[in-house]
Amino acid sequence: MSYMTLNNIIVSTLNQLDRSHDAHSIEIWHDKLTGYINDAVRDLALEAIKPKRRESVAASGGIIDLSLLKRECVKVTSVEKNGVPIAFSETETGKVFVNANGNVTITYRFVPNELVSPTDEPELPSFTHALIITYAVGMDRMSGEVNTQGGGNIFLSMYEVGKNKLKNAINASDASYIINKW
Image (tube, rainbow, N blue to C red; front, side, top):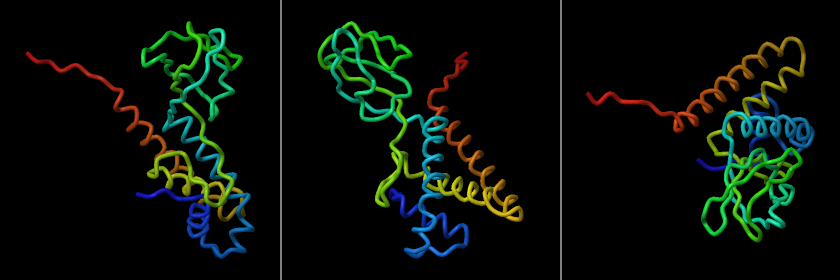
């Protein structure tokens, strides 16, 4: 499955809403739908997917400044120096303390960058794109006339069900169990 751009997601959302998706319509709906799309990307990243990145960053005086990372850090999961894991502790001030100086490799959960340009692609797996569209359709219908708000609830419910299934499927790989061999 291929990645969709912001423009592709807007066009698909407009199709679901039975609206025209010519250049003029896209321009009219761009800002509103982009807000919904970015809300869905952030929600999926924080609640279900929990994407991770690895970056090399300098530790100065045993301190790593998380603001130097390329993405917004939600949680540091590991720190390595020359491929060897090292102990670390996070603070509430956006810094991580390590017993090292120089370049270290940090692995962290992040929030994807917001989509702005029509060619931007969500930093989430392509199988989440249908959920992003479902969320945008639901939010748009909820903000409309009273007659369409019931339809919005259905789309938002489908989004929540899909997000929970996704969360359970991803977390299943972390599950363990005991098999009785006797």
